[in-house]
Length: 221
Image 1 (cartoon, rainbow, N blue to C red):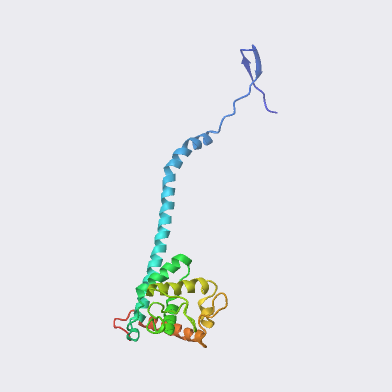
Image 2 (cartoon, rainbow, N blue to C red):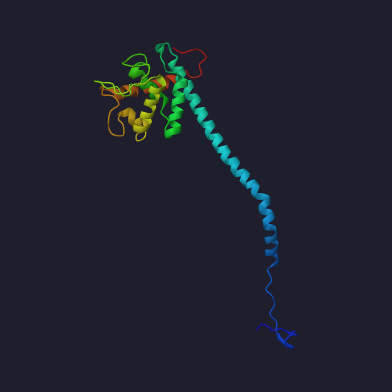
């Protein structure tokens, strides 16, 4: 049984039970007193580190994109600068610029080898057809009529890249497209028989050709 203590109360002139005041443990008091200085001391570092991490991630993302599209441009130029395509309105800079704009807008990267393969089959890289210079991918060109016209080559290229991104690569992988070149609605890019196989062969040829010639000091033919 806990021992009860008494103290003299001058007000009542008698002894009354002593009720000691509950004291906050010293360790908690010390921690409480130190809490605010500690938080003010370390909080700025946390904020700075978080900000730096965000900036670092953004920088890494920009570096990744810069390196990807730099390589995109270099590989495109290597292939387009062949004597075979002399006079083409297409360039690595143009394809890289449009590819990045479409990627930033849709999150889908149109494969360079696919763009080159279709450009070569559709119009010989913008050198022949109904309106090859401004519409090298024949976007809006049908067997019986033309429904789309463009004022500049870059506009025709953008139309193609957005078309590929939004209605083909949005739902199908590159392997699926090369097997059967149809969009998300099941429609063919072109009605020509064997079109998918032609793109498939050209895609693989271009990829192998660029891989074998990238970094060469002499201009390949």
